[in-house]
Image (cartoon, rainbow over the protein chains, first blue to last red):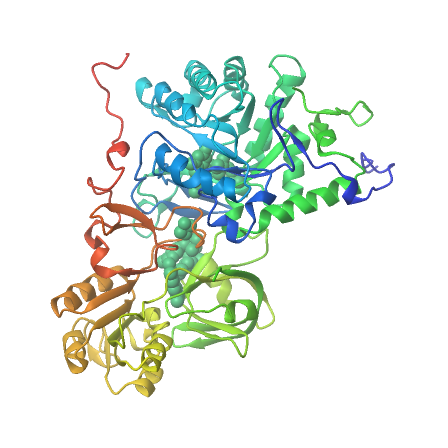
Length: 341
Length: 291
Ligand SMILES: Cc1cc2nc3c(=O)[nH]c(=O)nc-3n(C[C@H](O)[C@H](O)[C@H](O)COP(=O)(O)OP(=O)(O)OC[C@H]3O[C@@H](n4cnc5c(N)ncnc54)[C@H](O)[C@@H]3O)c2cc1C
Ligand SMILES: Cc1cc2nc3c(=O)[nH]c(=O)nc-3n(C[C@H](O)[C@H](O)[C@H](O)COP(=O)(O)O)c2cc1C
Ligand code: FES
């Protein structure tokens, strides 16, 4: 017996009637759930030639630190099956440049901006966050805690609950009451729910999952690591199942009450509306496109429009209604009407 | 003019020596003010292809009337091997034109055009543009072997000064492009040298051009994932007018750079004086750090 399609009994509805708004917390509702992932669309200028930025749910900027960073030596990238490894090394001109030269341009072009920030120490996270309150176009902060903590001998913040807690709390305090703060988690941990718990306890308004997966490739012509940085971050469709698992586990913990419920932003190998829906069913209220933009910088609007069609076909009236549906038993008709918040 | 993105249909794909000539029906790109030095970025296979990144190729020729864009490509890895197995009628997604073209400013140029291997692909249209503006051209075309030389006949039709070299002597003189370059510059009293090819060649050409008092513009080849400026893969150390060296993206600030501004010997390294290099120092435990 083939399993019954969960929405087969419903009549499809007109795509124009679908409410695509993404409920990303008390202080953040985006007109649609499609964002760009940090580091995959720079500060927006290049992507704008293919995707008008105001059409995105939001643009997540390349992670910015308090100061300029050159990034690592080349080669910084190598292609792997259905994915790529990168060791860009957070190249950027620093927060002054972002605030002076990039944010005004983004605001002028109607972009909603999630600013990704990082620091090598907790104080640097705070220093960067403090510069963002009241900036035009900024709708929130994504604290990229998947970076090394110099004060903890280079251990990645997001690999340690205490360091994650401290960084997120510092960002929350510095950002002020108006800017929602999302914490971006690495999948390279034993139990992602422990880190998620530390972040939500520290006051995170949401969680972004996932950052790249640590990987490595060796060039069999030169017998040397393919990347100058030796190891790199794996991204693209190759990591999608890992990312879906992370989102599902954290959402499940929130449903069961072991974790304070906050909205989730899902990312990792999304290349189509089908992939986006997979994350939404797992529990994401919004999704971000990363590596897929390198192949197709026009993809965001296709994903947005195809997702609308898909929801209409399933007679799901609003995106919010689809969030977390994979957690429901087939006979369970009590679908959540909105994201837990 | 902003780059266009189109599902381009392959009109022809045919061997030229060791390479393939790919002619795409892509009217939007063909009419988008393509200049010599611009490149195109191809996505190979459908949206679920396992080779997901774009492949960059110099535009050999864009014909606005025919609505076509031509590339010359070598089989190298998985993507170019798959591309070589495509047939007329197949579709590839093309983004073009991208990058910075060779500069044609500064009055009519007397320019030596240096191409290494498929690096000769943009040189014929560059020569035509220089000649149209009242300039003069000479060519130095080199490759490892005769079948990897490209564009010799086209060059001979455009200039009486054409030097051909191969590493193994299978065509022209045996040697490198740097061999005949001084004579080629002298023959036309060169104001400019434009080159495209492997990095060591571009460096050597820049050194010789500078010694002869000519400007040197080089089209570099750095590994690219997107070609559109999104990923920051394709950087190389370039010194700006302010004297500060930064990692610039070769797909947006290049691929054509003033060769004297590229720190050739430092490519593939992290020079200590690069802007922001100090922030990259690998973590070393300090006495003051908590245990
Ligand atoms: C501006 C520019 C112009 C170029 N013009 C030509 C040309 O006219 N003809 C031609 O044959 N080749 C050209 N190349 C080189 C060509 O891009 C590579 O040979 C090709 O991308 C390799 O793809 P692959 O699938 O064979 O190799 P893979 O190793 O499978 O490629 C994997 C990834 O690495 C990137 N990559 C690997 N090697 C290179 C490289 N040398 N340069 C750039 N990206 C690389 C690919 O784009 C891809 O994203 C040019 C490169 C650049 C940057
Ligand atoms: C080239 C590249 C650069 C990235 N830079 C950043 C970054 O600066 N900050 C960050 O939080 N994540 C960064 N990421 C991770 C992405 O934002 C995203 O979390 C990850 O790639 C998974 O999504 P994807 O598979 O859709 O790319 C980067 C990813 C890539 C491929
Ligand atoms: S290739 Fe992606 S930024 Fe240049």
